[in-house]
Image (tube, rainbow, N blue to C red):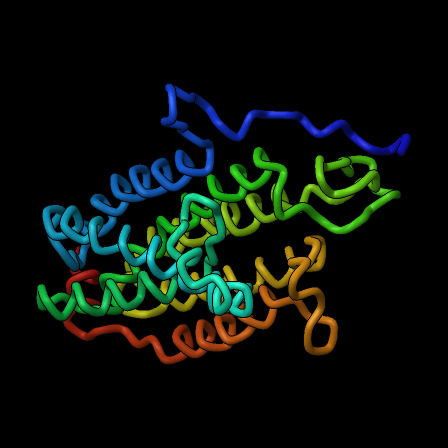
Length: 274
C-alpha cells in the first residue's frame, strides 16, 4: 500500500441541473465526434480528394448512429449475452453504460459502406481519411473510463504509480485506462497522421485503414495484459481476454489490407506531378 497513489476522485457527473446530468463519458463521445469531424473535413480535401466537405458533414450523422448502435449491440452480444437474454429490455438502456469498441467499429464500417454506396464514393479511399481521426475519440473515451473509476487494471503491488480504485478492493492496480489512452489514442493518432501526410501513402487506398486496424489491434492486445478482465467473462481461451480475442482478427485483416494496397495509377501520376 505504500506504493499506491491515491485515486483522484472526480465526480463522473460534470454538471447536473435537476434531472438532467451531463457526464464526462457523454462529453468524451461528443468531443471525439466534433474534433474528429473538423479534422476529417480537412483530410478528405487532401489530394487526391475523396469527398467534399459537405459530404463529410452528412457522414457525421451516419457514423454517430453506427457508433452508438454498433457499440451497444456489440457489448450486448460480446460481453453480457446471458444477462440480456433474460432482461432484453435492458439492452435499450444505454444510459446505464456498456459500450464495445469492436461493436462500434463494425457499426461504423456498415455506415461507411452504405454511405459510400449512396453517394458513389470510393470506400477504401474515403475510410482511409476517416479512420485517421478515430483515435481522438478513443483517447477521450479512455480518459472518461479513468474518471469514472471503471475498467481498472490488474493488481500491481510493486508498480510505483499503481492506484487503489474505488470498488476494486484494497489492492493497488495498474491505471490501465491511461495506458490505453496513450497507446490507442495518442500514439495511434500520431502514427496515422504521419502516414496520411505522405502523398504516396494516400495514393494506396486501404493502406491507412489497414494501419489503423493493425495498430489498434496491437495496442489493445498489449493493453489487455494490464487490464483486469471483465468480471462476468474472466480469462478465456489460453488465458486471453475477450478484448484480445476480438483484436487478433483486426491485426491480421489490417496487415492483409496494407499488403494488398496498391497505388492507383491516376492518383500516383497526379501526386507525382505536384
